[in-house]
Amino acid sequence: MQPNLTTSSNQSLKPAKAIGLALLFFVVAAAGLYYVKWSPYYEKAFIAATKHDIGKSILSGGANAAPEPSIQTAWEYAKTYFLAVWKAAVLGIVLGSLVQVLIPRDWLIRALGSRSFRSTAIAGVASLPGMMCSCCAAPVAVGLRKRFASVGAALAFWLGNPVLNPATIIFMGFVLSWKFAVLRIVFGLLLVFGVAYFANRFVKEEEVQAETLELPEQTAVTAQSGSLAVRWGKSLWSLFWSVTPVYLITVLLLGAARAWLFPAVNPDWGNSLWAIVFLAITGTLFVIPTAAEIPIAKTMMSYGLGAGPAAALMMTLPAISLPSLIMVRKVFPAKVLWFVTGMVIAFGIVTGLAAILI
Image (cartoon, rainbow, N blue to C red):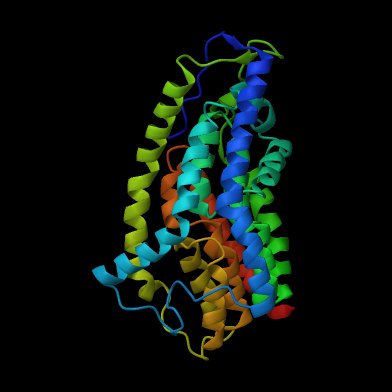
């Protein structure tokens, strides 16, 4: 189901008020990101540089396999995961609701409403300061789609947050090797900007109402009905209930099933093609906090996993996950999400093969 793209009233905001509301959004976003992401990651970068380590694998700790499926293992994984992401998850929901009420709709349409590469590029670049995991960025992508951002632009923002996360790439270089960091940058850029742009082709012209929406005036900023507090409350409530329940349930299920998705590693895995393909698929489906792919790969490599399968995990684990796909299901056509899922797996395989060759 796609967002209901309907025209708003002809009432217009005064330019000063529109600018003020937009500035309020960016102040909230900057303050939240500083507290949740920028400050902690700045300190973590020094730890990665000096110790060449950023913690244990969330899958198995220091073992070569995750614990067997059970209610207990589901709960333990979910607890560890949410303790790591809850601040970013709350921030993502808050920003996803605020973008619907503070950023003038007409501004977003002009910047992100087109199927052109320009809109995709703007959204992809705008994702870089966020540095969120796919599940925490999903509510913002939902908010952007509800404000008439194009499929490609919203996807670029959603994928760009985890895949092109500057902090994660720096950690990766210090903890693993700069080869992994370069591979992440090169194939990450292709994934974020290329896949997002071509995803627009899966949407029929008549479905892209934001692109042909007749604005009241070229310089006017349309207003929404109701007070700011009421509109924000409605957006926050709607977004919370549309993403949170499925998020909680799928994290529990994946936490229980992680022993099946990531079986015990041994030297026989090496750089085998089957290992690259298998981990590209499971990495695409599984859910992790930001940068958790680094200790996961480091631990698995210590038990015999080759650089190829590890690189496949480097690309697929952060990009998307089953919970994040379910969270955005109402604002993207199903064929777009299938396309993105298939391309993430494909990029994981290609990245794994490239890691073997260089």
